[in-house]
Length: 297
Picture 1: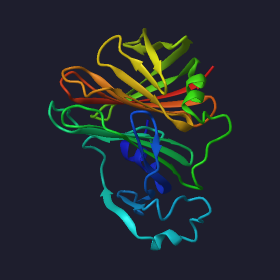
Picture 2 (picture 1 turned 90 degrees about the vertical axis):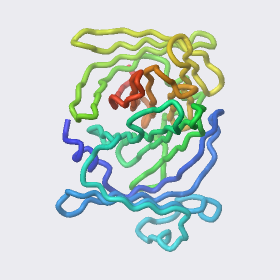
Picture 3 (picture 1 turned 120 degrees about the vertical axis):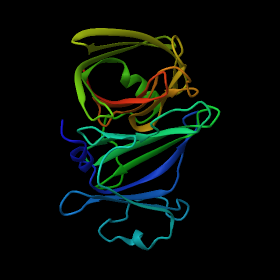
Picture 4 (picture 1 turned 120 degrees about the horizontal axis):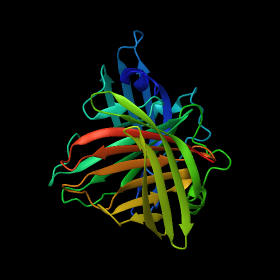
């Protein structure tokens, strides 16, 4: 695996997309259009980031707008952010593909808490912001879908609806899991996930390597509309299935004195899936970031 800085550079480019809100029922409410530029200096030692957001009621979509003409540069913005990076750290980690997560280093019992996760596939990115209110209630999600060469598109065969995604998830997925730690060292292991629907429940069997030995964990979820509810052990976790092969996995309420993870899932193509997991221990400390890359067999 390359250095964290090299992994950050995988995201260099111009990204057109939108910031959409997602409620507890999985309804996507269109938000501002966005333009995000990540541009390294000539010596590749500094990354400059600029993010612009535009009122969706005035500018409803990117389709039909040529990036080379840049008419959007004269649009009035509703938000503008400009930052520069010369190092990676402070709650942020990257993976070899350019996948990343940034967020709180520590989860306190009475503070607002949140994290952003991003997955990249070719000239498309999916970003997801998961947040909790000070008393621990899960807040609406922010979903960002971006493309660098053209407006966002969905390849043929990719699940379009939550129902399509649930059906597509059934079967055996084989791949690798790469975990990066805050001190920047990493480990990689094989991963196998079997998902099988039985009535209104989804059975899951996950096999991975720990300490050089295979380990298998089984679990079961209730299927409630677009949500999969895992409540057999630990904090109750909800996997919210979203359009276009995307999913959000997080506890129903922010856990206290229990380890937990936040996860973004995405099927960028018909038989490939990525999952990015940000983990916290039972002390509330952020401990790792894992990227699982799977292919359906």
